[in-house]
Image (cartoon, helix red, strand yellow):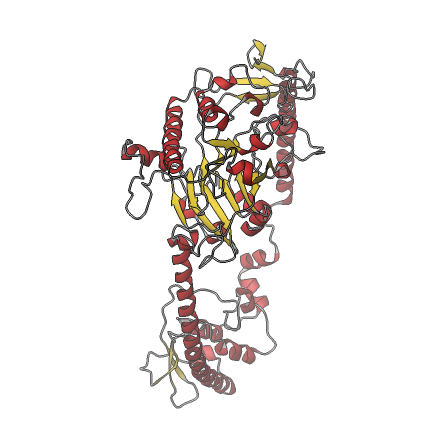
Length: 617
C-alpha cells in the first residue's frame, strides 16, 4: 500500500515549529510521499533542519523572482520516505526529479522540454520562476507537486500569469500522456471546480474561466484526469480544504475545496485496453481530507469576536491524502541529483564545518602544550620578582626610611627580564612587561617598561586585576598586601609601584577626598524632598492622561454601531485594497463568517465610518 499526502503548510518553518521538528511533522502523516506547498523559503534559507530528516529524501523548488511582494513567497517541496537513498528498488524513491515543468531550470543546460517549443524562453522562465512545481518520476507514475497561482478578479496581470501557467502545464501533461505515462497531479491549485466545492457559491460561480478549464480536464467532461476525491465521494458536501483566516470562517466551516489530487493514465494491469479499467478504479483505495489538521477543533470553546483571543496553530489549509495498492517494485536506483542532500548550502556547509572543527581541535591541542610550558616559566620569573621587591621593602623598613623617600626608580638598562608578554599565552596581560636590575645597597633599583595597553580585556579568573574597591580597604598587614600585588600576574607593574608609594589609611583617604566618600557611602545624592515632589508631579500627570484616555475610549464605544443581526458592537476595519476607497474606515459584524442559514455566524452588517450604512450583498 502506498500513501500520498498533499498539504499547503502556509510556511514550512511555522509547521516545523508547531510539531517540534521536521521529522515529527513528516511522521505524523505516516505517508510514503508528502507534498508541501507555500513553503515560503528562499533558496539561501534552505538549512539542514528545514530540508533534511532521517528516513526521507527531499526535493525543493523556491521562488527565483525579484518582483515586489514575491520574494520568499510560494515554494514547494516533496518528501519521500525511503529505507535507503542508494541502490534501492522502492517506488517512493524517485528515479528522476525536475524543478519546474518547462525545462529551463534544468542545471544540465536549461533545455526546453519537448512539447513546449511554441513558447518563448522568457515566458517559460517567468512561469517557472516562482517556485511552483516539483516533478518526481517514480517509475510507475510521474508526480507533479503544484502550487497554482492566485489571481484576484480585478488583477489583470495575475490573471494573465495564471492563464499562461496552466496552459503550459497542460501541454506538458498531454505530452506525457501521449507516451502512455501515468500522472498524479497534487497540490493547492487555487481552483474550486464546482459549486459543491464552495460554501454558498454564487449562481455564476461555475462560469469562471479557470473553473471551466479545470472541469474540462476531468473524465466526465472527456478529459484524461480523475478528480480522485470526487471519484470516491461524488455527493459529499461541506468538504472543504481551505478557510479564510482573517474572518474566522473555519469556526463555521465556511470554506472551499482548492487542494486536489488528480490521476490520469492507464492502470497497472498488463492489458491496458480492458474496458472500464483505469488507475483509480483498479488501484486507488481511498482519498479524503485530514480534518484533524484543521486549526479549529470540534468542541473548541474559543469564539471569534472580530479576531481570535488566542492564536490558533496550524495552516489555513487541511491536507488531502490518497492510498493505493498493487504497485510492484522497480529496478534498483539511487536518489536523483536534485535531492536536497546535494545542495551546496547543505553538503558544502557540512564539509566546511567538519574541516573547521578538525583544524580547531588540532590547534587547541598544540596551543595547550605551548601555553602550559610557557606558563610554568613565567610563574617562576614572577615569583623571583615578587621576592626581590619584598626584600627591598623590608630593607627600607629596617632602616626606618619610608619606601617612598628612599627607594629610587631609575631608568637603568636592564640586565634580565623578569616579566614579558608571551604571545602564545592569552591569560598574561600584554602590558605586563618589566625589566629589573638588582644592585648593591639597601634598596633595589627597578626599571619599568610600559607595555602595549591596546585591546586589553578584563578576565574573571585567578589572573584578573583587583577591583578599585580593594585598593581602599585597610589591611592588617601592609607587607602581605604588597606581596599579593606584585605576585598577581595580571596587575600592571605601574599599579604595583603606585601602591608602594601610597600608605594613606582608608579613613585619612576619605577625609582628603570627601566627594569620593559620598559616592561610596551615599548613593542618593539628590535632595529627598525634591525627589518626592517630582514623583508626585509625575503621578498627577499620569492620572490626568489615564482619565483622558478613558474618556476617549468611552467616546469611541458610544460611536461604534451595533450590528442588526445580533445587536452587538461591530469591529472597525480599514480598506487596504488600492482604489478610490483605500484607507477608508468601516464597521462590520464582529462574528465569524459562516453560512447565512446559521444565526450564530456573521450577519453581514456593514457600515462606513460616515453616516451611510448598508448590508453586504
